[in-house]
Image (cartoon, rainbow, N blue to C red):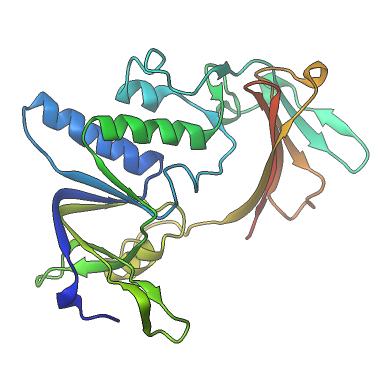
Length: 270
């Protein structure tokens, strides 16, 4: 590793690691609060993806309540949520048949009235545009590789990884040292199983007294279907086949946009 003293550093009030919904919403709200108080606050967002939204792969059926709290005029601003949930169905599948569960039997978390179907990746790209318009500095394509600590043990920021390192671990002619980003506060919004969060959790005992996390893996495709087979706003969830009775998980099909269907399956890894 290159000598840390040689690394350049940048100073911010708040450093946010992760350019997903949580990280961008935090950055936007900080800027909004600062503007309400006529204060200047320096906020940056570090995103490992090549662009904002590149690592956002969720379905998704989206409850707009938090978006409306952030931007009450989100529709007028052109947020990419156009398809409201219409017909909803929940199917229990066997290998050869499907039985529909009556909608009235479903618990409240499985009902989606007033929600929207869309691409969470596109919504995050839009949030990135709103954040930049407010003065948030976004650095896409740079992964936070290291947590930086102050002398008292508190977090003082992060550093990006070195670039141009050969397979032997030695610098090549294209070597470029990482950059330190220092903040009065550092906000970690890496998503599930973040590399830096895995270091912070044991150091600060963040899991003490908490339920253990559970994990799943999902696959998804987006299909463009014939207009005759498209049902705008249809939200279909399924349980059962191809999973056995000892494995939790399920599938979905969401119809949105112009003849697009999000199709996927999530399997629990317990």
